[in-house]
Amino acid sequence: MESKSTNRLKPVVVRRSRLRAFVIAVVAGVLAIAAVWFAFRAETGLERLFAVSMTVFFGFAAALALLSGLERTPLIEVDEEGIVDRGSPVQAGRLGWDVIKRIEAKMVGRQPVLAILVYRPQRFVVDLPPDRREVAEEAIQRYGTPFIIPWSGFDQRLEDVVERAEAFRQVYQRQS
Image (cartoon, rainbow, N blue to C red; front, side, top):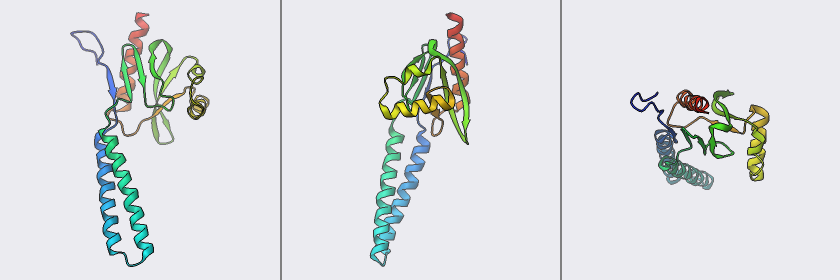
């Protein structure tokens, strides 16, 4: 984890998984083509209407998945200054290590999530728009933090990111 020559940790950048997005795009594209084929073979107007609606739906899903796969903006960045959050409903931006208590991997049902536990979580909710504020307040009540990031479709393992983030946090605590 640590580079022996510089004795520094390497920053972590987490993005959406391109492979997952492109697989979804291909599957949705194939289903859209199958719906077009079905539309040409349909015998009744109702079948044709159904096929056209499925073509539009799967075409739209394929386009969104393709755009998602092309998007390379990092959702989470971890470095010596803190964590940049673009993946939680709060989307707080930079969170310095001075406001972070710890980073944990949790399970919510069957869904793994990254929980960034902070000191005084309510202060991050004050300036949010009403819809995001409501989600953040619910997350604080359920998990004790507004920074809950569902871990699906990312290009790195949750356990690796938690381990590296905790290493950065511990280095910061030793220095301060």
